[in-house]
Image (cartoon, rainbow, N blue to C red; front, side):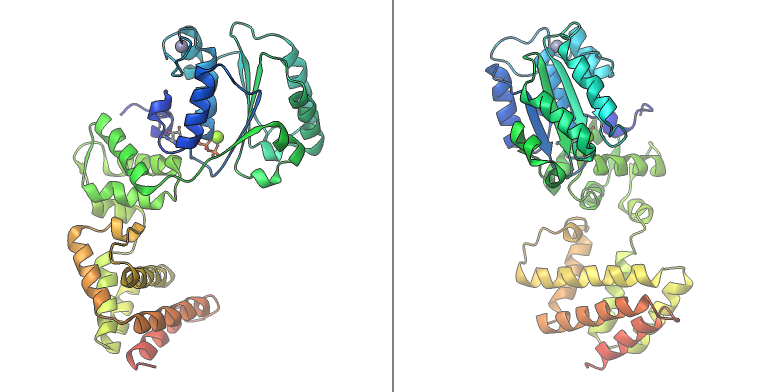
Length: 368
Ligand SMILES: Nc1ncnc2c1ncn2[C@@H]1O[C@H](COP(=O)(O)OP(=O)(O)OP(=O)(O)O)[C@@H](O)[C@H]1O
Ligand SMILES: [Mg+2]
Ligand SMILES: [Zn+2]
Protein backbone atom coordinates (compact mmCIF):
# COMPACT_ATOMS: atom_id res chain seq x y z
CA UNK A 1 0.00 0.00 0.00
CA UNK A 2 1.19 3.52 -0.66
CA UNK A 3 2.09 5.60 2.36
CA UNK A 4 -1.18 7.52 2.13
CA UNK A 5 -3.41 6.73 5.05
CA UNK A 6 -6.54 4.94 3.98
CA UNK A 7 -9.00 7.59 5.01
CA UNK A 8 -7.30 10.18 2.82
CA UNK A 9 -6.65 7.85 -0.05
CA UNK A 10 -10.26 6.68 -0.06
CA UNK A 11 -12.00 9.99 0.40
CA UNK A 12 -14.75 9.68 -2.24
CA UNK A 13 -13.98 11.64 -5.43
CA UNK A 14 -17.50 11.36 -6.81
CA UNK A 15 -20.97 11.50 -5.25
CA UNK A 16 -21.58 7.91 -6.25
CA UNK A 17 -18.77 6.72 -3.99
CA UNK A 18 -20.25 8.26 -0.85
CA UNK A 19 -22.05 5.78 1.36
CA UNK A 20 -25.23 6.66 3.26
CA UNK A 21 -26.44 10.27 3.51
CA UNK A 22 -28.77 9.64 0.57
CA UNK A 23 -31.09 12.50 1.46
CA UNK A 24 -28.22 14.98 1.46
CA UNK A 25 -26.82 13.69 -1.80
CA UNK A 26 -30.16 13.70 -3.57
CA UNK A 27 -30.92 17.31 -2.72
CA UNK A 28 -27.45 18.58 -3.45
CA UNK A 29 -26.98 16.77 -6.74
CA UNK A 30 -30.40 18.00 -7.89
CA UNK A 31 -29.43 21.55 -7.02
CA UNK A 32 -26.20 21.18 -8.99
CA UNK A 33 -27.97 19.72 -12.01
CA UNK A 34 -30.51 22.49 -12.04
CA UNK A 35 -28.10 25.27 -11.20
CA UNK A 36 -30.11 26.17 -8.13
CA UNK A 37 -27.34 26.36 -5.62
CA UNK A 38 -27.79 28.17 -2.30
CA UNK A 39 -25.22 30.49 -0.88
CA UNK A 40 -25.26 29.03 2.59
CA UNK A 41 -25.25 25.41 3.68
CA UNK A 42 -24.91 23.85 7.06
CA UNK A 43 -23.73 20.25 7.26
CA UNK A 44 -24.47 18.99 10.75
CA UNK A 45 -23.78 15.59 12.23
CA UNK A 46 -21.37 13.15 13.86
CA UNK A 47 -17.66 13.15 13.05
CA UNK A 48 -16.30 11.05 10.22
CA UNK A 49 -19.57 10.66 8.34
CA UNK A 50 -18.86 12.68 5.20
CA UNK A 51 -19.40 16.38 5.92
CA UNK A 52 -16.04 17.63 4.66
CA UNK A 53 -16.13 15.05 1.90
CA UNK A 54 -19.47 16.27 0.57
CA UNK A 55 -18.51 19.92 1.02
CA UNK A 56 -15.47 19.41 -1.20
CA UNK A 57 -17.51 17.41 -3.69
CA UNK A 58 -20.02 20.22 -3.92
CA UNK A 59 -17.22 22.73 -4.48
CA UNK A 60 -15.65 20.49 -7.08
CA UNK A 61 -18.87 19.96 -8.99
CA UNK A 62 -19.67 23.68 -8.98
CA UNK A 63 -16.28 24.64 -10.36
CA UNK A 64 -15.70 21.69 -12.68
CA UNK A 65 -14.81 23.00 -16.14
CA UNK A 66 -16.10 19.99 -18.00
CA UNK A 67 -19.39 19.35 -16.27
CA UNK A 68 -22.36 19.90 -18.59
CA UNK A 69 -25.75 21.30 -17.68
CA UNK A 70 -27.94 18.60 -16.19
CA UNK A 71 -24.96 16.66 -14.83
CA UNK A 72 -23.76 16.68 -11.26
CA UNK A 73 -20.61 14.56 -11.02
CA UNK A 74 -17.27 16.41 -11.19
CA UNK A 75 -14.98 15.12 -13.94
CA UNK A 76 -11.87 14.74 -11.75
CA UNK A 77 -9.77 15.57 -14.82
CA UNK A 78 -9.98 19.29 -15.45
CA UNK A 79 -7.55 21.72 -13.77
CA UNK A 80 -10.12 22.81 -11.23
CA UNK A 81 -11.01 19.26 -10.15
CA UNK A 82 -7.35 18.25 -9.98
CA UNK A 83 -6.45 21.28 -7.88
CA UNK A 84 -9.24 20.53 -5.43
CA UNK A 85 -8.20 16.88 -5.22
CA UNK A 86 -4.63 17.97 -4.51
CA UNK A 87 -5.77 20.51 -1.96
CA UNK A 88 -4.37 23.60 -3.67
CA UNK A 89 -7.32 25.28 -5.33
CA UNK A 90 -7.23 29.01 -4.67
CA UNK A 91 -10.99 29.42 -4.98
CA UNK A 92 -11.72 26.81 -2.35
CA UNK A 93 -10.99 28.31 1.03
CA UNK A 94 -11.13 26.00 4.03
CA UNK A 95 -11.13 27.54 7.46
CA UNK A 96 -10.98 25.53 10.64
CA UNK A 97 -12.96 27.50 13.18
CA UNK A 98 -11.51 25.40 15.99
CA UNK A 99 -8.08 26.95 15.44
CA UNK A 100 -9.19 30.23 13.81
CA UNK A 101 -11.91 31.33 16.11
CA UNK A 102 -11.29 34.97 15.72
CA UNK A 103 -12.80 38.00 14.22
CA UNK A 104 -9.63 38.64 12.19
CA UNK A 105 -10.07 35.53 10.11
CA UNK A 106 -13.67 36.34 9.41
CA UNK A 107 -12.79 39.94 8.61
CA UNK A 108 -10.19 38.72 6.16
CA UNK A 109 -12.78 36.38 4.77
CA UNK A 110 -15.20 39.28 4.37
CA UNK A 111 -12.59 41.32 2.53
CA UNK A 112 -11.67 38.37 0.38
CA UNK A 113 -15.18 37.55 -0.52
CA UNK A 114 -15.77 40.76 -2.42
CA UNK A 115 -13.19 39.80 -5.01
CA UNK A 116 -14.41 37.57 -7.74
CA UNK A 117 -12.97 34.05 -7.87
CA UNK A 118 -9.52 33.97 -9.44
CA UNK A 119 -10.21 31.37 -12.07
CA UNK A 120 -13.39 29.54 -11.25
CA UNK A 121 -17.07 30.19 -11.33
CA UNK A 122 -17.52 30.16 -7.56
CA UNK A 123 -15.52 31.01 -4.52
CA UNK A 124 -16.37 28.32 -2.02
CA UNK A 125 -15.73 28.73 1.70
CA UNK A 126 -15.78 25.66 3.90
CA UNK A 127 -15.94 26.54 7.55
CA UNK A 128 -15.22 23.52 9.69
CA UNK A 129 -16.32 23.21 13.33
CA UNK A 130 -18.39 26.34 12.74
CA UNK A 131 -19.90 26.21 16.23
CA UNK A 132 -16.52 27.17 17.65
CA UNK A 133 -16.43 30.63 16.13
CA UNK A 134 -16.28 33.38 18.71
CA UNK A 135 -19.40 35.48 19.10
CA UNK A 136 -17.96 38.46 17.26
CA UNK A 137 -16.72 36.29 14.46
CA UNK A 138 -20.09 34.60 14.16
CA UNK A 139 -21.80 37.98 13.94
CA UNK A 140 -19.39 39.13 11.29
CA UNK A 141 -20.10 35.96 9.37
CA UNK A 142 -23.80 36.54 9.71
CA UNK A 143 -23.49 39.90 7.97
CA UNK A 144 -21.83 38.15 5.06
CA UNK A 145 -24.45 35.43 4.92
CA UNK A 146 -27.17 38.06 4.81
CA UNK A 147 -25.86 39.54 1.60
CA UNK A 148 -23.52 37.12 -0.08
CA UNK A 149 -22.16 38.06 -3.50
CA UNK A 150 -23.52 35.80 -6.22
CA UNK A 151 -20.17 34.08 -6.72
CA UNK A 152 -19.83 32.96 -3.09
CA UNK A 153 -20.94 29.69 -1.53
CA UNK A 154 -20.55 29.02 2.18
CA UNK A 155 -20.55 25.54 3.60
CA UNK A 156 -20.51 25.42 7.37
CA UNK A 157 -19.79 22.08 8.98
CA UNK A 158 -20.38 21.24 12.61
CA UNK A 159 -20.63 18.29 14.92
CA UNK A 160 -22.67 20.39 17.35
CA UNK A 161 -25.35 22.32 15.51
CA UNK A 162 -27.19 23.11 18.75
CA UNK A 163 -24.31 25.44 19.60
CA UNK A 164 -24.75 27.49 16.43
CA UNK A 165 -26.43 30.84 16.84
CA UNK A 166 -30.00 30.66 15.49
CA UNK A 167 -29.62 33.64 13.16
CA UNK A 168 -26.85 31.80 11.32
CA UNK A 169 -28.91 28.63 11.17
CA UNK A 170 -31.77 30.56 9.63
CA UNK A 171 -29.49 31.81 6.85
CA UNK A 172 -28.37 28.34 5.84
CA UNK A 173 -29.94 25.33 4.23
CA UNK A 174 -29.32 22.66 6.83
CA UNK A 175 -28.53 19.01 6.18
CA UNK A 176 -28.43 16.50 8.98
CA UNK A 177 -25.85 13.79 8.51
CA UNK A 178 -26.43 10.49 10.22
CA UNK A 179 -24.15 7.83 11.59
CA UNK A 180 -23.43 5.14 9.04
CA UNK A 181 -24.87 1.69 9.45
CA UNK A 182 -22.84 -1.49 9.90
CA UNK A 183 -23.68 -2.97 6.47
CA UNK A 184 -22.70 0.31 4.77
CA UNK A 185 -19.38 0.44 6.58
CA UNK A 186 -18.73 -3.23 5.93
CA UNK A 187 -19.36 -2.83 2.20
CA UNK A 188 -16.99 0.14 1.98
CA UNK A 189 -14.25 -1.67 3.91
CA UNK A 190 -14.61 -4.63 1.58
CA UNK A 191 -14.22 -2.37 -1.45
CA UNK A 192 -11.05 -0.85 0.01
CA UNK A 193 -9.53 -4.22 0.92
CA UNK A 194 -10.28 -5.51 -2.54
CA UNK A 195 -8.61 -2.53 -4.18
CA UNK A 196 -5.59 -2.92 -1.92
CA UNK A 197 -5.52 -6.64 -2.75
CA UNK A 198 -5.46 -7.62 0.91
CA UNK A 199 -7.08 -10.86 1.94
CA UNK A 200 -8.87 -11.29 5.25
CA UNK A 201 -11.18 -13.53 7.19
CA UNK A 202 -14.75 -12.32 6.59
CA UNK A 203 -15.41 -11.64 10.29
CA UNK A 204 -12.56 -9.12 10.35
CA UNK A 205 -14.50 -6.41 8.52
CA UNK A 206 -17.53 -7.00 10.71
CA UNK A 207 -15.46 -6.62 13.84
CA UNK A 208 -13.81 -3.43 12.57
CA UNK A 209 -17.17 -1.99 11.54
CA UNK A 210 -18.64 -2.84 14.93
CA UNK A 211 -15.93 -0.77 16.62
CA UNK A 212 -16.41 2.32 14.46
CA UNK A 213 -19.65 3.51 16.05
CA UNK A 214 -21.04 4.77 12.79
CA UNK A 215 -18.04 6.80 11.62
CA UNK A 216 -16.42 5.74 8.37
CA UNK A 217 -13.24 7.58 9.25
CA UNK A 218 -12.88 5.56 12.45
CA UNK A 219 -13.40 2.33 10.55
CA UNK A 220 -10.74 3.33 8.02
CA UNK A 221 -8.23 4.38 10.68
CA UNK A 222 -8.76 1.10 12.44
CA UNK A 223 -8.22 -0.77 9.20
CA UNK A 224 -4.97 1.16 8.79
CA UNK A 225 -3.81 0.01 12.20
CA UNK A 226 -4.86 -3.54 11.52
CA UNK A 227 -2.98 -3.63 8.22
CA UNK A 228 0.22 -2.28 9.72
CA UNK A 229 -0.13 -4.64 12.68
CA UNK A 230 -0.71 -7.78 10.66
CA UNK A 231 1.55 -6.87 7.75
CA UNK A 232 0.43 -6.57 4.18
CA UNK A 233 1.24 -10.07 3.12
CA UNK A 234 -0.82 -12.99 4.16
CA UNK A 235 -4.32 -12.93 5.42
CA UNK A 236 -5.71 -10.72 8.17
CA UNK A 237 -6.92 -13.10 10.85
CA UNK A 238 -9.80 -12.39 13.22
CA UNK A 239 -7.67 -13.52 16.16
CA UNK A 240 -5.04 -10.89 15.43
CA UNK A 241 -7.61 -8.12 15.19
CA UNK A 242 -9.14 -9.19 18.49
CA UNK A 243 -5.72 -9.01 20.09
CA UNK A 244 -5.01 -5.61 18.56
CA UNK A 245 -8.30 -4.28 19.87
CA UNK A 246 -7.59 -5.69 23.29
CA UNK A 247 -10.84 -7.60 23.24
CA UNK A 248 -11.00 -10.29 25.83
CA UNK A 249 -10.84 -13.69 24.29
CA UNK A 250 -14.42 -14.72 23.54
CA UNK A 251 -13.67 -18.33 24.31
CA UNK A 252 -12.69 -17.29 27.81
CA UNK A 253 -15.87 -15.33 28.37
CA UNK A 254 -18.01 -18.19 27.10
CA UNK A 255 -16.24 -20.59 29.44
CA UNK A 256 -16.71 -18.26 32.38
CA UNK A 257 -20.43 -17.83 31.71
CA UNK A 258 -20.69 -21.60 31.34
CA UNK A 259 -19.36 -22.03 34.89
CA UNK A 260 -22.02 -19.62 36.11
CA UNK A 261 -24.71 -21.56 34.29
CA UNK A 262 -23.61 -24.75 36.03
CA UNK A 263 -23.32 -22.86 39.34
CA UNK A 264 -19.66 -23.82 39.62
CA UNK A 265 -18.49 -21.02 41.91
CA UNK A 266 -15.10 -22.60 42.66
CA UNK A 267 -14.22 -23.07 38.99
CA UNK A 268 -15.42 -19.58 38.10
CA UNK A 269 -13.28 -17.98 40.80
CA UNK A 270 -10.22 -20.06 39.89
CA UNK A 271 -10.78 -19.10 36.30
CA UNK A 272 -10.64 -15.43 37.20
CA UNK A 273 -7.54 -15.96 39.28
CA UNK A 274 -5.77 -17.57 36.36
CA UNK A 275 -6.92 -14.87 33.97
CA UNK A 276 -5.55 -12.18 36.24
CA UNK A 277 -2.26 -14.04 36.39
CA UNK A 278 -2.25 -13.86 32.62
CA UNK A 279 -2.52 -10.08 32.97
CA UNK A 280 -6.18 -9.82 32.07
CA UNK A 281 -7.56 -6.59 33.54
CA UNK A 282 -10.51 -7.49 35.84
CA UNK A 283 -12.29 -4.27 34.83
CA UNK A 284 -12.00 -5.11 31.15
CA UNK A 285 -13.13 -8.62 31.87
CA UNK A 286 -16.22 -7.61 33.77
CA UNK A 287 -17.11 -5.09 31.09
CA UNK A 288 -16.89 -7.79 28.44
CA UNK A 289 -19.03 -10.16 30.53
CA UNK A 290 -21.67 -7.45 30.96
CA UNK A 291 -21.67 -6.78 27.24
CA UNK A 292 -22.18 -10.43 26.46
CA UNK A 293 -24.95 -10.83 29.01
CA UNK A 294 -26.68 -7.77 27.63
CA UNK A 295 -26.66 -9.33 24.20
CA UNK A 296 -28.02 -12.57 25.64
CA UNK A 297 -30.95 -10.60 26.93
CA UNK A 298 -31.51 -8.86 23.60
CA UNK A 299 -31.18 -12.18 21.83
CA UNK A 300 -33.97 -13.57 24.01
CA UNK A 301 -36.20 -10.79 22.77
CA UNK A 302 -35.17 -11.07 19.15
CA UNK A 303 -33.38 -14.14 17.84
CA UNK A 304 -32.55 -12.27 14.60
CA UNK A 305 -30.55 -9.76 16.61
CA UNK A 306 -28.08 -7.87 14.40
CA UNK A 307 -25.94 -6.40 17.15
CA UNK A 308 -22.23 -5.55 16.90
CA UNK A 309 -21.14 -8.53 19.00
CA UNK A 310 -23.32 -11.03 17.18
CA UNK A 311 -22.23 -9.73 13.79
CA UNK A 312 -18.56 -10.05 14.65
CA UNK A 313 -18.82 -13.66 15.83
CA UNK A 314 -17.65 -16.53 13.70
CA UNK A 315 -20.40 -18.99 12.84
CA UNK A 316 -18.90 -21.42 15.36
CA UNK A 317 -18.92 -18.75 18.07
CA UNK A 318 -22.42 -17.67 17.11
CA UNK A 319 -23.69 -21.18 17.69
CA UNK A 320 -21.98 -21.29 21.10
CA UNK A 321 -23.37 -17.89 21.93
CA UNK A 322 -26.95 -18.84 21.11
CA UNK A 323 -26.68 -22.18 22.93
CA UNK A 324 -25.31 -20.50 26.00
CA UNK A 325 -28.00 -17.81 25.99
CA UNK A 326 -30.57 -20.59 25.74
CA UNK A 327 -29.28 -22.05 29.01
CA UNK A 328 -30.62 -19.12 31.02
CA UNK A 329 -34.03 -17.64 31.63
CA UNK A 330 -34.55 -13.93 31.11
CA UNK A 331 -34.89 -13.51 34.87
CA UNK A 332 -31.52 -15.18 35.45
CA UNK A 333 -29.79 -13.04 32.88
CA UNK A 334 -31.30 -9.92 34.36
CA UNK A 335 -30.18 -10.94 37.86
CA UNK A 336 -26.63 -11.67 36.66
CA UNK A 337 -26.44 -8.35 34.86
CA UNK A 338 -27.46 -6.51 37.99
CA UNK A 339 -24.87 -8.31 40.08
CA UNK A 340 -22.06 -7.66 37.64
CA UNK A 341 -22.99 -4.02 37.20
CA UNK A 342 -22.97 -3.62 40.94
CA UNK A 343 -19.57 -5.32 41.07
CA UNK A 344 -18.23 -3.06 38.35
CA UNK A 345 -19.28 -0.06 40.40
CA UNK A 346 -17.71 -1.38 43.57
CA UNK A 347 -14.44 -2.06 41.75
CA UNK A 348 -13.85 1.67 41.48
CA UNK A 349 -13.21 1.90 45.21
CA UNK A 350 -12.21 -1.67 46.09
CA UNK A 351 -8.75 -2.26 47.54
CA UNK A 352 -8.75 -5.82 46.22
CA UNK A 353 -9.82 -5.28 42.66
CA UNK A 354 -11.17 -8.75 42.00
CA UNK A 355 -13.10 -9.06 45.26
CA UNK A 356 -16.37 -7.51 44.00
CA UNK A 357 -16.19 -9.86 41.04
CA UNK A 358 -15.73 -12.88 43.30
CA UNK A 359 -18.62 -11.81 45.50
CA UNK A 360 -20.84 -11.49 42.46
CA UNK A 361 -19.89 -15.01 41.39
CA UNK A 362 -20.70 -16.43 44.81
CA UNK A 363 -24.05 -14.68 44.92
CA UNK A 364 -24.96 -15.80 41.42
CA UNK A 365 -23.95 -19.41 42.05
CA UNK A 366 -25.77 -19.55 45.37
CA UNK A 367 -28.78 -18.27 43.49
CA UNK A 368 -29.27 -15.23 45.72
N1 LIG B 1 -20.31 8.83 3.83
C1 LIG B 1 -19.06 8.41 3.55
N2 LIG B 1 -18.82 7.62 2.48
C2 LIG B 1 -17.56 7.19 2.22
N3 LIG B 1 -16.48 7.51 2.95
C3 LIG B 1 -16.66 8.30 4.01
C4 LIG B 1 -17.95 8.79 4.37
N4 LIG B 1 -17.84 9.52 5.48
C5 LIG B 1 -16.56 9.52 5.82
N5 LIG B 1 -15.82 8.79 4.94
C6 LIG B 1 -14.38 8.53 5.03
O1 LIG B 1 -13.90 9.17 6.21
C7 LIG B 1 -13.00 10.22 5.89
C8 LIG B 1 -13.37 11.42 6.73
O2 LIG B 1 -14.63 11.90 6.36
P1 LIG B 1 -15.01 13.45 6.44
O3 LIG B 1 -13.77 14.27 6.54
O4 LIG B 1 -15.93 13.74 5.33
O5 LIG B 1 -15.78 13.45 7.82
P2 LIG B 1 -16.48 14.67 8.57
O6 LIG B 1 -17.93 14.34 8.66
O7 LIG B 1 -16.09 15.95 7.94
O8 LIG B 1 -15.85 14.52 10.02
P3 LIG B 1 -15.39 15.66 11.09
O9 LIG B 1 -16.63 16.10 11.80
O10 LIG B 1 -14.47 14.93 12.01
O11 LIG B 1 -14.72 16.76 10.32
C9 LIG B 1 -13.14 10.45 4.40
O12 LIG B 1 -11.90 10.81 3.87
C10 LIG B 1 -13.59 9.11 3.88
O13 LIG B 1 -12.47 8.30 3.64
MG1 LIG C 1 -14.80 17.47 8.52
ZN1 LIG D 1 -13.69 18.79 -13.56
